[in-house]
Image 1 (cartoon, rainbow, N blue to C red):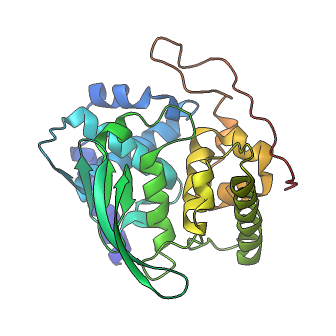
Image 2 (cartoon, rainbow, N blue to C red; image 1 turned 120 degrees about the vertical axis):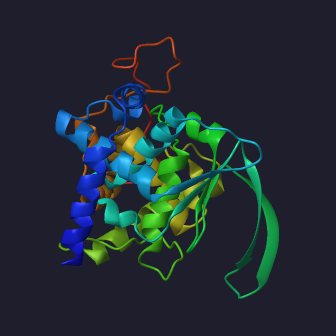
Length: 283
């Protein structure tokens, strides 16, 4: 009953408050959304509008953002839940925006139980049971199909936190029919392989920040899944399959093999940037 009423309230709001055409056209032309079909674009637009209604966006340090900037942020934020439903984000309520990278002072407990406190310079942070913090400079430079997207990264952490008492551990709540054992095995293998690459200083087709923790491994692979899916499918095909099941999307079907492109290059096409296979890994 409550679900029905919530859905009706959402439908009424979206019908009365659509994202204006001009603002949406500017957002959907970003390379991240290449290949989405008409139905997917419609649903992305609706979810972005609901995101802007449900989430408070709080600029700090004198940052001023216009409606266009908010739509660009929202469109990236809801892409991961396009086929999951907006309720996947119902356990948090605010996005805090800094003009650029910011300093965060945090406490953490190491593996032997010692509590540490220190400062970090960050482009984004997902606070357990709290808001998402983002650098607007980095948000504006996301969505370019280079494998790096701070919005998707932090939203992946939020999805991860739904299954671990508010703390990301690399194992988000899996859907009915997914094999938890397969998820653990596939991501553990990839995580340990990335650690070996990092320890030996060898080339990796995936940002080695993924070797920091299992939580970062899931978040970084999520970025690549939506931005450069071929890099995941080519080198970590088992990881790609798990992410395809989890996000209920297959970006390989819609995105070309591309690298980051300056504004003067065409969006629809572009040069391929091949990534050599990492050594010593057979997914």
